[in-house]
Image (cartoon, rainbow, N blue to C red; front, side, top):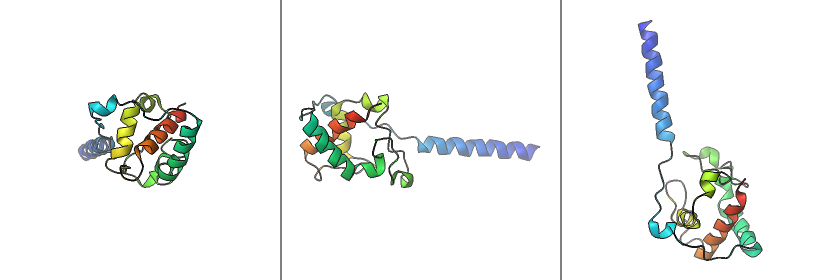
Length: 131
């Protein structure tokens, strides 16, 4: 009985440790980006450009509908996020611009790969993924 309790307690500790490690760390966005205004007007042209860029650069991890279920998502250490959820959509355009431009961990940075206007187009497209 004593060894069963020890096994159960040990298993619980291991499970809790794994769940704590798997939690994404907060992504701090500098204040000057948080308040940054989108430099590209929302409209059909921007959304279509954003869709093309998103499909080419983002969908493999984030999924076609932004649900975090892209073909590469299974191989990632952290969940790429669900763009349709309110907690994602409540971020400022500047937050999304910063995160896309600079990347971190498994999220690649797009600075030097996409122009700022291209990133703004992707931000405009990501806004269409809300529920």
